[in-house]
Length: 66
Image (tube, rainbow, N blue to C red; front, side, top):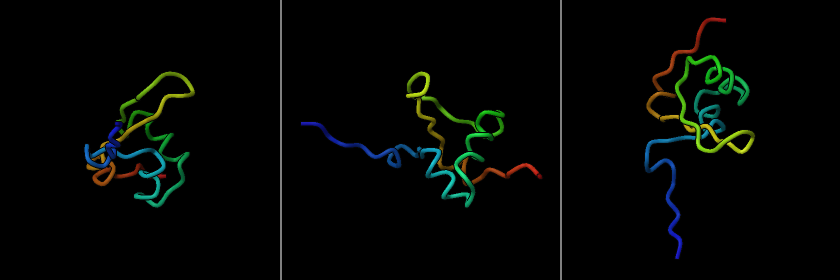
């Protein structure tokens, strides 16, 4: 039997969830991660890799001025 464990139980969110939390586009969150201003963990390699962000970091993050 496989037990499903939600990422939220570990305080982690996906890029999509982070974008919804911040009220911005997914691409914006991806850019913040790529620019190194929003820390993320990468699970997997290449195109199949998934970025996971700490929910606390996303909530505390202050976006850079445009």
